[in-house]
Length: 336
Image 1 (cartoon, one colour):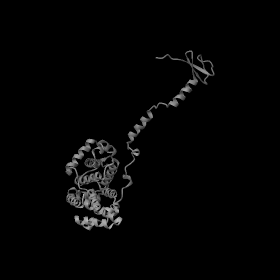
Image 2 (tube, rainbow, N blue to C red):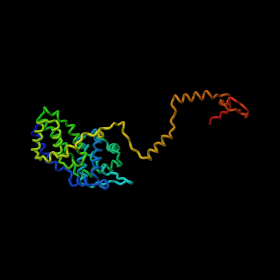
Image 3 (cartoon, helix red, strand yellow):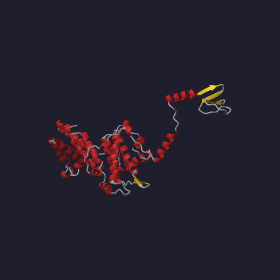
C-alpha cells in the first residue's frame, strides 16, 4: 500500500475512533472508587487486564485480540456498574471475571482463525472462574447489545500498525530500528493501567512511536512523526505528556506464556482431604519382583504333608498339645 492510501486510511480511522472510546466520566468514576467500595476499583480493573494479557499469551492469541478485549472491557465498565460479589468476609469480583472473559472470547472470535479458538469450557477452566458456559454466553449477548458491537473497533493498535507502515513506506532503509513487537509490548503494558484508557488511541500510539524514535535518534523517522502529527492536528501537549514515558514498561515476565507442565490447580480444603483419604484407601497391588519374593518366602516356610500344612515355627506345640520344638500342624480346610 502506497503512502497516499495509508494517509487516507489513517484519516478515516482518526475520524471513527471517537465512536470506540470509553466514556471518560465512567473511567474517572472507576479511578475514584476505593477498595472498600462495592463497585469495581481501578486496581481491580488493572488486575483483570493483566489476567487477560496472561491468558492471551497462554492461548497464543494475537496482540489485536488483547487490545480489542481491553477496549470492549473499558467501554462496558465505563457504561455499566459492575459490582463485587460478596462471599463470606471477602470481596470476590466474579462479575468482573465473567465480563473480562466474555470480552476476550468476543475479541478472539473476531480476530482469530476458527481453528485457533479456545473452547468456551476450557477458557473458563484455565481462567479458574466459577461461572458456567451459559453464563458466559449471556454476558456476551449483554455486552454486544450495550456496545452495539458488530465485528471491529478502531484501537490504538490500529494506529500503531498504520504509523509503522507509513514509516516503512517513507524510510525503508531505517525500518530495522523500529521494532513492531516492542511497540506492541509497550502498548500492552500501557493498557494495563486505566489512566491510558483515557487517551485517544491515535495519540497514545503516536506517543509510543515518537518515544521509540527518540531512543534510536533517527532524524528521518522523527520528521515522519512530525508530518503525521500535523496531518492529524495533534498538539504537542496531547502528543507527549510528561508522565507517559516513565510508566511505559516492557513486557513483564509474569505475562510470558507459562509452561503447561507447571500449571497448578487450586482446590478447596475439603476436596484436598477427600483426595488424600481416597489415595490412602487404595490397595495397590505389589510389583512383580516383590510378589516373587513373597512367594519364595512362603514356599520356603510352608510344606504340604498328607492333608496338613506344616508351618515351621519357634512355638512348642503339636496337634495334641504336646511339646514340639520345630513345627506345628494345621488341617487343610476343604474348598467351598
